[in-house]
Length: 117
Image (cartoon, rainbow, N blue to C red; front, side, top):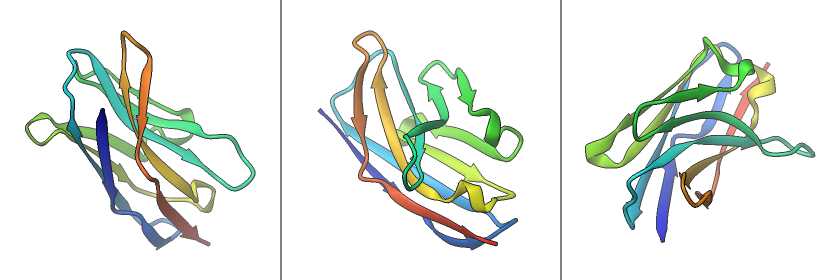
């Protein structure tokens, strides 16, 4: 099992910034990815950004150039720096840990990000 603890959500005005953190603990794996997904009201959960333990990064087109994902392997923590936030970024953001070989997913509890216009 993998436990994920998220922090850093909140309310911010359009154009502002927030930083999300997600700390993983529990079982270790050789090949995995960590990242963030989000779900707005009445919409499906969508990928925001992911990073593998090998350093491969993937961003949704809608956040490229505004969001930056990074990781601290020593702390088993992944970060999402969100700049130039827009009202359409408003959603619950979920941390994800994926065991690549098994396609097994673990999820955090979610943190609310609200961007006011």
